[in-house]
Length: 212
Image 1 (tube, rainbow, N blue to C red):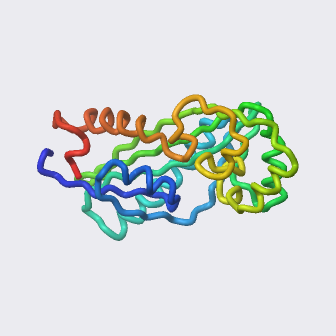
Image 2: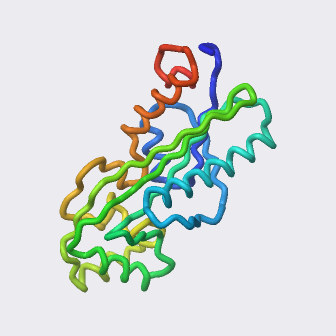
């Protein structure tokens, strides 16, 4: 298996995940399909994991049909915000974004990112997934600060109506856990999980990055 070269495919259109994956210095392509991001799961871990798996499986089926016989490492992710069991996805509009942020204002919430992995080699498909949790605390958000943040438009394409790496830092008080996880992809854990995943399938003792 040492001589195989895999194609790394990121099943996400998120510019934030693209940037984080680029830090690995591994060539990769992006194939993101527009599928409904819906889950009937009630708990946040299962909810995020189910959506991440739907994303990666859609790309898996596409590649199986259009590029049969190829060797791929597929990676997808889904990030959600959760407070007291309530799941906050991406807001539909400014009003919903304001509602989300008012709910989170002055409190500590969890951010879950589920990562789904698929290896397609020699006609076989191997799968794995994991979920990382970080905790984020907001200061109380004043009306003026809220409206100025909403004016930036930063909230509309992000779970929980905010992006940790943007102007929301004006009211973020504390982050516990993996900062990159809050951005949208737990990169350091992904490196570890990928190593374990590859080692469980291939006999090669080198780095998993050697396959690219």
